[in-house]
Image (cartoon, rainbow, N blue to C red; front, side, top):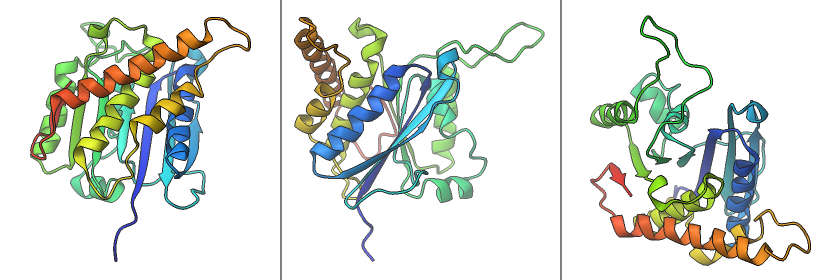
Amino acid sequence: MVEERRLTISNPAIGGSGWLTLATMEADAAIGEGYFATIHQCRGLAQAGGPMCMDVMVRLNEAVGGTSHYVDYINGFDLSESWRGTSAVKTLQEFQRLFPRGVTVVSDYYVEVPILVTASAKGPRYPAREEFIKTYEGLIAKGYDIRVVAYDFQKHKFPTIVKGPFSLGVIVADLNLRKDDRFLPLSKEAAVEGILANVPVKKGDPAGDERRNFNRLVFERGYEARERAGYSEKERIVYV
């Protein structure tokens, strides 16, 4: 039996309405491509600056149900939030059951200082980004089907609020580079339309077109950054 092509993007993040907007951008990009899409929202502690998550399910047929299955991409705010999408998995068998198609982690290559950290004799403690990468490397060495695409958002000097369009550009480019028939790809054109349709702009705002064009630029930078890095099936951790 041929496996149905599909795509599920999970968006764990430190809370804010921007990531709710990003989920809508992703869904509208899929709809513009001719697919069906639905969003599963878990707002969590967003208003307190805590963790939240939005899953976007993209299917060839109508997507129904309140729970996403078989997450393909984890689109994290930073490495700690990206890790949250896989940290509950304790064994290789459990990972294979929860991620039968493997998972690609797309993340900003830094660590957001959490509100609550584990206290120790040395004071507040949380893993550094190098530790997160080593953890992923260790899992990959044990046979976990994980790919990591880490980008450096700060070097582009964009405001944090547009990280969503940038990361979407990275994901769209990654899908197109992979050419994996199991996944539903998104074109640049459909992604841009999904972004432009959801840029928060007040009616009659003279700066509205400028904001839309800026979001388009940020998306294209993310796409180009991932495209420049190239693709190799053997390369499991890519720095963009």
